[in-house]
Length: 237
Image (cartoon, rainbow, N blue to C red; front, top):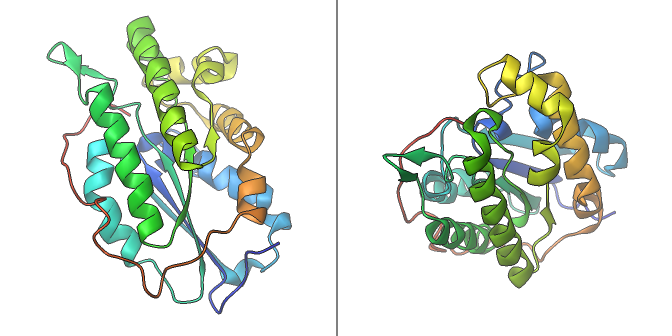
């Protein structure tokens, strides 16, 4: 296992929207907290050398995350650490406002590419989790989101970035749907986030966390990697 190297061990930042933030979970762990808990025993460095940042922000699109990634990731670098970044965007991008998606699919894919390049430019090895479905937004939203997830997977494949595909399975998942519909139509409870965490783990998260380390650039990383460009407005997830 390669994490735990350097004086500050592993630093992992989760960027995304309210699903990443874990909105609706009465345990306040969401899927990010659950996957880290499940992987805890696999980490070589021990708890004191692992720092987790949940940087999910409710209602944010890929454009919003692109604006803030550079500054928020840069200040969380530490010389000698193993830096990781988990990205999950798209659910808000596909939400319609004034008869069209908040972020056009092509622009979303451009944002994801810029975010991945920006993360690497700052010395963070990335992994992407597909966009969770907003159950209450109906079939049209799901169709847009499935197409978007496929496009995001292609961006990841072209850059050699691991991608955990979760959208279609969550849309059909009984627990995810029931908990979301019992709440605000978007966010599940503890059971739904458990199902999402399981899909992320099945998608290779543990293997990426314990066995994948790109050459770190935290001490000499470039600050202008394009991740701070672009702007957006804010939506339901």
